Every structure is written in structure tokens, then in C-alpha cells.
Amino acid sequence: MANRLGTVLAAHGRHYLIEADELRLNCVTRGKKSDVAVGDVVEYQLTSKNQGVIEAITERKTLLYRSDQYRSKLLAANLTQLFIVVATQPGFSDDLISRALIAAEAGGIQPHLVLNKIDLADLLPQAKQRLRMYQEIGYPTHYVSARTNPEQTLATLRPLLEGQSTILIGQSGMGKSSLINLLIPDAEIATREISAALDTGKHTTTFVRSYHLNDHSIIIDSPGFQEFGLHHLTEGMLERAFPEFRPFLGHCKFYNCHHHTEPGCAILDAVKSGAINPVRHAMYEQLVHEAAQTLGYK
Image (cartoon, rainbow, N blue to C red):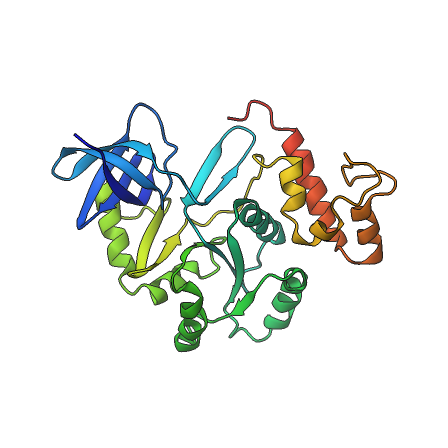
């Protein structure tokens, strides 16, 4: 029997909810494989009326994932955009923002910053100031308040989401769920259905899931997390994932320059002149150091 094609809507462990035509199927992978991501278009075989086995993953346009020293965690495939959701309160992590931006750059995905809870006027100037570094690099930043000004929030975000496949990521407490529920009014019902289909229980929020905004726009929600490891990126991939580095790459005195302490380094000269923010260069050095520690990584 020929394999059929479907799109992965949600993933939990080795269990995947697949949408194929009008059907929703609970599928597993063969053996112990778990390298399937939400957004993947997969080939599958039916094993019963509403169950199947994933046989293959079709070629991905993009893949977003994070990794630590020992393993990787797939977030989503075939994305076009990444929305990093932060808020005026509670405090957000610059480290997480930087790492998510770098993962997006390395994966060929357009990142956006979304500052939520702008109604907290006392805290807004400080939050805007912290985001200025990313805006100066050229990252688009959008200001919303999902709960107190839903109309303005929808007016700001809906045009950006049109025709795109967008994942929302962020730490817990940033209001990501409020944004999802505003953009997708049936999100909570859909999540309960997905939980039931994946047999993960009513209260599970630890899986990635996809929603249709309309016929040609997809929003993917991810669980809140505090860390974004990038151990899978090599030094060469990292230097190209900093947009502000790119004008200076290839202009160092030594062709194999590490942009660390070498004489005649164009990147270090740019840091000294103010063309590259020293905070960003420090992040680069931190990530190169982490990548060098990756032993036994699979």
C-alpha cells in the first residue's frame, strides 16, 4: 500500500497527532525513533481507522530546535517566523532572547520580538530600554497588551501572521497563553482534544501544538522554558548567526580567526568602535565555549 501524507499537529514523546485531509490520526514512529517535529509533513501507513505509523519525514524547509550537551529537543519544522514573547512583568531573560534569535538566524527563520503587558506603564520604559539592543540590530519589535487591549493586539499581530507558519516561544508568565487564546478563540478546546488524542491527560502543557489561524496561516504554541541550548551550532554557524558580525566577516588578519583575542580581528575592532555591542560579543564567546564542551552529543 502506498504511503499517505499528513502534517504533524502535536507531539508528545513518541506519539504524534497528524492531520491528513479531514482526518486526525494518532501515530507513532517505528522503533525508538522520535525525530519527528510539529509542522513536519510525513508519510504514514494506516494501522486502524484513526491510528497509523510514520514511515518517513519529507524534506524540511526549516527546523527549529534547542540542544544541551547530550541531546536535542525539536521544537517545530517548516516554520517561517519565530515570535519571542516577553513582558514588562515578570522580568524576562536577555540570555533566552539572544539564544532564540541566534537559533532563528541559524535556521533561516524570521524572528520578531513581542513585548506584552505594555499597560504596566511604570515598567514599560525599562522593558523598552532592554529591547533596544535588539532593535538596533534590526529585529522587529511589537508592543501589545493581550488582556487590557485585545483589539489593538489583534490589529498589530494578525497582519504579521497572515500566510506564515509562526511559533510563539517564551518563558512562563509572559502572557503567551493569553496571546494564543486571543488569536485562536478555540485554542483551549483544541488543546483538550489534542491532549485526549495523545492521551496526555487534561492538564498537560508540556507539548508543542499547532493551530490553524486560517486556511493558510499556522500558529504553533510551545511550552514555557527557561533555557535555550545551542550546542548543535558550530563556531562557523554561530558567527554567521549574529547579523551585526556579517559585514566584518572575512576581513580579519587571519583567515581562521576565532574573534577572541587575535590581533587584526575585524570583529574585535568593531566591538571597540561601538559597531558591535560588547554584550553580544560576550554572548558569542559564551556560545563558542559551550559548543566546545559538547562531548557525547547526539
